[in-house]
View 1: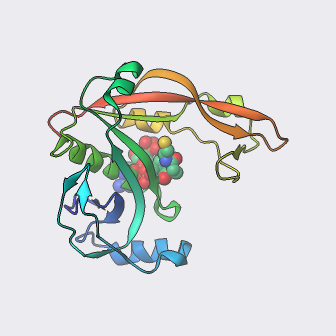
View 2: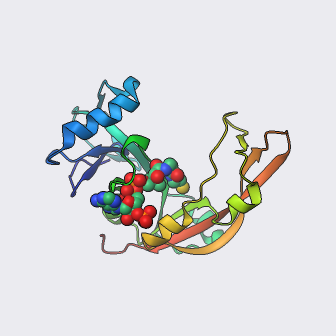
Length: 201
Ligand SMILES: CC(C)(COP(=O)(O)OP(=O)(O)OC[C@H]1O[C@@H](n2cnc3c(N)ncnc32)[C@H](O)[C@@H]1OP(=O)(O)O)[C@@H](O)C(=O)NCCC(=O)NCCS
C-alpha cells in the first residue's frame, strides 16, 4: 500500500511493518519471530495496484508484524447503512500478539486513515465493524467456534479501543455467526463505527 514511515509503523501492501528508523527495530522483530518462527523469511512488495490504480511495486523485502486492509464498498450498501459518500472501510486489523500494547495498533490506524484520505481513495470517512462491547456478556466465557474456520475464537470486543481512536458507533446489528462448543448456533452483534478523516491525519 505505502512504504512511507511514521513514528513507529508503516504499511507495505496492507502489511504492517516497523519503521526503518525505529531504534529497537531488530529486537522487536526478533521478539515477533521468536513467537512466530514461520514468519522469519521476509515478504516482497509486489503489489501492482491500489483500488485498481496502477502502482510500481518496489520489490523491497519486508517483515510484517501485523496487517490492515482498506476497502471501498458498494456506495449503495454504504448508503443503506447510513454512511456518507467517500467512505473507506478498515478491515482485518491485526498486530502480532508478541508486540501488542506498544502503540503499533494506534499508529497503524493513524497511518491507514492518512492513506485512505489520499489519492486514489480520497476518503472523507473511515468505517469499520467490530464485535459489540456487550458481546462478551451475551456469548458467555466459553469461546465459540468460528463457523467458517472451525477454530475456537476468543471473544474480545475492541469497540472501546476504536472509540479511543475517535470512532463513533452509529449502528448495531446482527453480525458474525459462531457455534457454541455444545453445538448451538449464535450470531454475535457487531457495532458499526465511523470517523471523519477528511484532510488526513
Ligand atoms: C486491536 C489490536 C490491533 C491493538 O493493537 P496494539 O498494538 O496492541 O494496540 P496499541 O498498543 O496501539 O494500543 C493498546 C494500548 O497501548 C497503549 N499505547 C499506545 N502507545 C503506546 C506506547 N508507545 N507504549 C505503550 N503503550 C502504548 C494505547 O493507549 C492502548 O491503550 P488502551 O487500550 O487503553 O487504549 C491488537 O490487540 C490485535 O491485533 N488484536 C487481535 C485482532 C483484533 O482484535 N483486531 C480488531 C478486530 S475488529
